[in-house]
Length: 447
Ligand code: TRP
Image 1 (cartoon, rainbow, N blue to C red):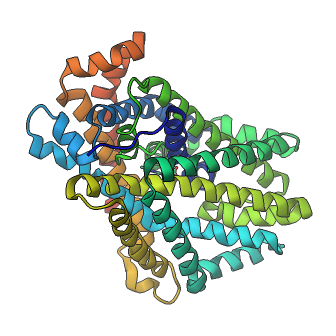
Image 2: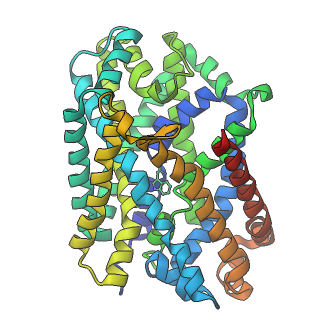
Image 3: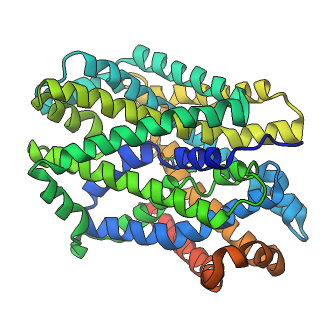
């Protein structure tokens, strides 16, 4: 199967659109708040620079050399034991599992776009009450928004790489970059900005626990879209003679830049209006709306702009979560793109409904297993288990399985002086770090 190709800039936008998602604007600020700020941010940045950079190039290389879907690429590139290595490609299933909770959360952002047009909650208590009621009682609205996300995402991917995914990113990425930078510049004029800066960049190591290390490393994967064949699948459609190193650097810079801008902006607003920083997942859905209320009319505009940015970020990531499986279905089972898009769409749509039920007051207990409900399990199993495992498989595959000469002939000139460092990091540092993360998880699972 020949794949349609991205344009050069189309690829960068699509990969950055995948990387910049709810992870940057919703998750990064709240886990930074929960884990005490500076030291956590430091660990995250180091992980992104070392592990993220090494793996991004490795994952791109598998796609660029293989040019097919993830399973076929592992099979084609493995010098031997092809039947074993092809299972590496099934890490793309993680994308559909992420979508089980990702789609309902994008739905929440739709709800908040509408809210921002009307009246915002005037106190934290009211904000909390309205958000809690929305996610635990208002099943109808959530289902409605989740259905919209399903239709939208399926319609985009059904149009293919060029006509769907590339177009969407050309449209939404500028919206995202302009809105986030605009709000950031406003934030720099407020007094709370210095406090936000201190919170994010002055490290208090006493707050760093092994659990927060694991969270930081796990988040570095999640935010860069690594470990589940998204980058691999997009790279299979790269134009010939692309520079993988330069592309990786731009994508990582955009992703990290937007996370830091979003974090600084939110914390400035929260400090300025005396709201709680460690509010957890409710940070942007509970604390922030009250801050916007305090700002008066300007707040309504900011709220609207902010939730549009959040929805855009979510949608460009969502298409990248389903695309790997779609390409697999097309390539291996000769399904039409439409059928493949519908099949993967229906998967996350139906399980997404279960996820919505699992956080509801009325049906939650039917869908709670052990310490977590279905929604949280989907998050935990992917971000904390499947992605690090996927990353480990890719690092071992490129670092130890594919012939050395093949890797060198593609990357030696592109990486220049740092080639040996990159190869060493991929062969040893990345696998050891990921292995430790997974050992730690076992400890956490036993709790
Ligand atoms: N990176 C996205 C975010 O930060 C989520 C995402 C999209 C993702 N594609 C992925 C995560 C592939 C892991 C793997 O929200």
